[in-house]
Image (cartoon, rainbow, N blue to C red; front, side, top):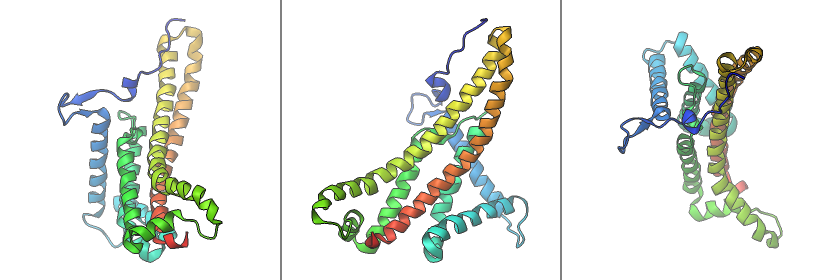
Amino acid sequence: MAGEFHAPSLNDFFPPAVLFEGTPFELDRLMLIRILMSAVLLAFMFLAFRSPKLVPRGIQNVAETGLVFVREQICDEVLGKESGKKFFPLIASIFFTVLFLNISGVIPGLNISSNARIGMPLVLAVVAYVTFNYVGIKKYGFLKYMRSSIVVPNVPPALHVLLIPIEFISTFLLRPFTLTVRLMANMLAGHIMLVLFFSATQFFLFDAANWMKVFSPFSLLAGFGFTLFELLVVFLQAYVFALLTAVYIGLAQHADSH
């Protein structure tokens, strides 16, 4: 064998600081990608709606299709038209933020979603967590909301000793945790798989013995196929995060019908 395959190091996935190193404003490659994709999202929305037409075309049509999807398939479907309209700006913002930050994972030269690190998923989960708890507390008051959320009606009193802690953990601890970890883990796993496929392709082409070069097309095709799959995951993760946010808001609005 002409060379050896070395798995990528942690720095290959999360490179060290590239700007303002050693200062409170230190930025690494992942944070720069996050800033870039946020700017792309703002530019996309600005260009789409700077001079909206009655009959949308081009970029306006793409943006409106996305917004209509969020409104009809998430907000109205889960919350109803009245509540859906009220929370549409928040849920649409979450959907497009996750979508655009995710899509950098399949853009050549960027090759990673900034949601693959816990910071941004945690921020989005906190926003969802604060929102649905605020909705419940505002409607019922703190004590009634807490009681309605963790006390299961029509069960034997002895079971409350077991069910109340389970409901509390499920509602107030696991929801933000699972929102965060689901998004981060899916995007990180996808990034690692793509790195491994294309690293293997490079190894087979340039470092492996001649007889092993025959494997390079297979690893390249696997990487290309997984890139297509990752495009689906990019959309699904945005949809799931926005959908669960709407579901949790709906549950908080109807906490008394637990």
